Image (cartoon, rainbow, N blue to C red; front, side, top):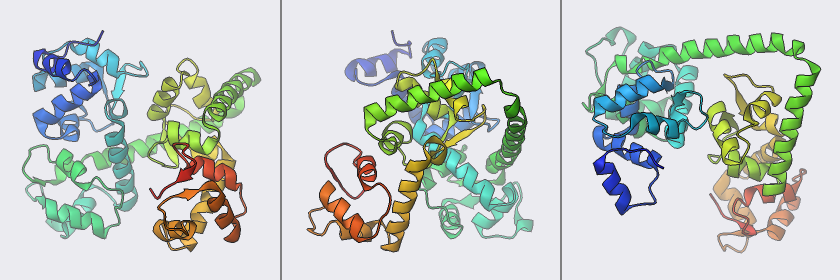
Length: 351
């Protein structure tokens, strides 16, 4: 059965039996700290490395006043049974926002002090332990430096671990951790590339066979790799998926026993991520060509109006195919439509 999470949580679950243990834990963190990310950074992931051990997770829950069965709670949340709990296994959407922001920051700024200074609109020499960045400065700084993936206040409230409505440079220490993590990943990738030629032929055939079974299942179940990617693997419509959410997606699809073989079959190591063009090159070409067409039409809204000539707010397959032909699209238009028709309704709407 479900882990015991305390009398208050159990009473809530009795009133709302559809709530999962994961949802109840997230609600507990939200009610205690006002922000799941704040709770995660303040009580669990204090080292800023995106995952915590069972011991650290249990200590954090106890510190927050959690009264349930911590061991059973961790066991249920630890989807891939790795013994660690990454943020993805607690809240996939939040993990995507947080990791995407970390990667963007590492590409945009030189260090935590540089990031603080530029987002605050001050000189680097003015950055000190007592200097605070307001919510307004944060929002305006992100806008000026090109952050466009949303979640600005979710991230700010998470970093504001003291609930002051402002953050100091110490709340950006994860930036330097992210830089070090990137260097480790690159080193691991280089080691894997050196070791790959030594992989025995038997192992390669086992990996290829696992990938083949997985992709045949996806094609049979979803009709196209594009739809499988969008529906089962990357519901945020990103062109990349990290290892942990990929493992979880495979487990949800019934491939938990083969997930490591599949991952290695795509040429990945424990630190990797999978790109759409590695998963299926043709699907990546189809989508990239369509994106180029949409850009030529002036963006998604204008492109949709081009397809929706009857202005009925949806486009059926025949109209979609004929318009693509008129616009000179040269890839497999039927596969594209099947991938865009995420719910298999026979038409697409503007998302």
